[in-house]
Image 1 (cartoon, rainbow, N blue to C red):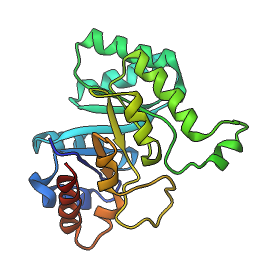
Image 2 (cartoon, one colour; image 1 turned 120 degrees about the vertical axis):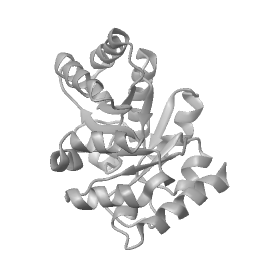
Image 3 (cartoon, rainbow, N blue to C red; image 1 turned 90 degrees about the vertical axis):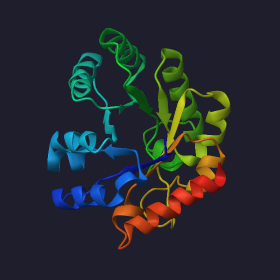
Image 4 (cartoon, rainbow, N blue to C red; image 1 turned 30 degrees about the vertical axis):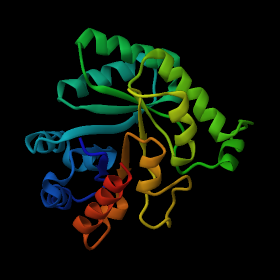
Length: 229
């Protein structure tokens, strides 16, 4: 399976479907966040599954255990392949998700989100949290790992040491992958760097769908990944 996940955070239904059709067999997995889901509804899941794609639902659930569990149960009925939830929602949520997977005998991957890539140490300090992001991410990852979740989303900055602490088959997914490092995400890196440091998957969105030549960008990223294997 290819290591590139495409995020389709577009607010135009036609453009979303056009991009999926253009990319074709180049990519296996698409990340569906709130924007494409609100634009297309669950039709976007049907569209991707019909095209034999894996669906990564990125809603970053952050709520009480019962609410998170019930929401995920609905998504599992849709036939999705992966979903995200916030590790900051705590150990009880992690455990309730694992219980649900066992109840449903589901192979869907539960992926914990640590700290968003738009955050810096200074942002964390403003919350009164006197700990470096790196250590906070490690603590959150440890909770998820010990509860038995399938993987983690983290920035490239935390990737190397997390890979050392949490070996495969525990998945590490890295967003904030950029062709040019100019945008609102702070903790970012290149596709080549991420694969070299042990990422199982990388997530790329804006550099692809904002490009006038999205296919060219996809091919360049895929080549970077292949060259680093």
